[in-house]
Each structure stands twice: as structure tokens, then as C-alpha cells.
Length: 397
Figure 1 (cartoon, one colour):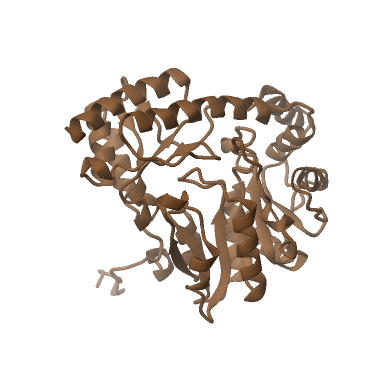
Figure 2: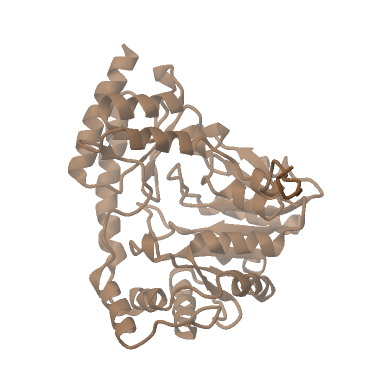
């Protein structure tokens, strides 16, 4: 009891916060910051190493010069929503009403948060893959949902399988969540696999959240937009954005497209939390879509070149690895070394000054793997592979 006679409770945070998983990433970051940055090569951060194309930046500067620095309509500038709708129809063959079926958000992460808060009641279950993007379970938990993990197999390139989903359905199942191309595995789902999941969603009247933020970054395969499948637009929230496709991570701009009732519910929450995405960022995004410069094509060509070097490099050092078909990650198995993912990443950092992310941070099925990001300069990738190869050979002796 305080001097004023007021009883102080020991715990002042909410039970909801307790549901947010501490994946161990904090411990790894603490170790990372304790290591001198001199000579350090990072294959860890999952963002483009390209700067935002200058014509996109100029559009934001011009917008600020002209006074576009205030609030925008909460769902986003009408002309940007129209441009997103036109882009989705062109790329994916899906037509959305820009007035009622698209909302511009502060990154695709906000779009995901809005989707789950708009769709889930307490205790509703969301089926998702393991391994998975690190924020998925927390977004579900914060919406008072329950994440139901479906183990995926390296032997099948970590693809989410309809039969495995169906085996985990219960009366509480509400949503299927997946992201592809996938972080951390680089996996791209084939159309036939997605058709089976679509049939399952229709059969059991399930909603779907399809995170396709890496959809423009594929190599030698054609991306299938999930809501383009028969009957899926009516039950799918599509998440996408500008971060990966246009190297605009710091601009924090994404969007959701989906059925009008769900988008309206998401927009209601968005209005009372974020209100609107930054006006100058929206003007930049409009230039990205309408500027007539194919920035993505050039980036993808360079990522593809790096991907081959990284993939071949980890195989040459004796690590098993499936060929990634999208995003900018390889996910090699380090089980042959006899140490855990965390120990591998920590020792590689300390002994060779190369940063990779332990696979267990992405779920239980990620144990025995590490995520290596090839959104780095080619000389850095080559030197990182040389150091990593030396480290692995010492472990395998």
C-alpha cells in the first residue's frame, strides 16, 4: 500500500498483451547489438536493399510542396484506390469496386490486424501454416482468436496442404490464413494446391486471409492470386502493399481488398485507430502504380540472380535446401550440423560476423533451419557464403 493509502497492483498490463508471443527474437537482437558492426554482413533483415525509385520520392516531395500534408479520406485517396483496383484487375484478373472493396492502410500489417479484428469473435480459430511469418499468431491473439498451426514439410517445399487443413477443422474454425510467396521459406503455392484449399473453404463456409505482399517477386513461376479462383473473391481478404514491390518499406503503405461488408468493418476500425495513411505516402504510391516505369521488373531480375547464387551456395556447403520460387529468402536445413537453429545463428554471428535468422523464431517446424535473405549486395552475399561455408565445414568435420 502506498503512502496515500492506495493499493497498487503488481501487474498493470492486460491479459491480451500476455497472449503476444515472445519468440526469442529479443534475445537474438540483444546479442546482435553486442557485436561490433565492423565487418558484419547481414542476411537477416527482410526488406529490399534498393532505395525507393526516385520518381516515386519526387511525387511525395511534389505533394508536400503543393500542400498535400493533411488528412485524407479514411479509406485512402479515391484516385489511389482506383489505381489499386486497376492494378489488381490487370495483374490478377480480379475486379474490385474502389469505393467499397478497397481500404488503404498503414502497411499490410495494419490491414491484417484490421481483418482479424473485423472477422473474429473470442475463441474463433484461424488455421495457418508452421513455419509462418512471425507476426501472424500475435495478430490473431490480439483479436482474441486462436491460431491453429498446420505443420508443413521441407520435403514438400513447406506448402500448405488442404488435407492437413481439413484434419484440423473444428466447429470453431473461422478463417484460413496463408502468405505466399512465403516468409520465411520462399515457397510459392501452385494453382492446383490453391484450388484444393479453395474447395475446402467453400465446402466448410470459411473465410480466407491471403497475404500476397510478395506476389510481384516470383522466379520462373506464375503467381496465382487466391481471390481470382472461382468463388473465392466473395470470402477472401487480400492483403498487399508497396513495401516489397517498390522498395517502400519505410513509407508504411498497404491495402486490403475484399467483400464490401468485411472492408466496411475494417474501415470502421481503421477510422477510429489510424484514421488514414500518410497523405504524401499515398501520392508516392499513386506514382508507383501510374508512373509508367517498371521498377519491379529490374529489381526482380537482380533478386533472381542473387537467389541462384545463394541457393547454389548453401547446397555446396552441404546443407539441404528446397529451391525458393518467390520473395527473397532461402531456408536451408542446418540439422546435419547437430546444433539448434538458435545456436547456429548465434555462433555464426559471433565467430564469422554473418547474420541469419534462426528458423525456430518462425514456428516449431522452423527448428533445424535458418532464414537467409538475399536482398543484399552481391559482394556481401558471396563473402557471407564464404564465411558460412567455412563455419559449416568445421561443424561437419
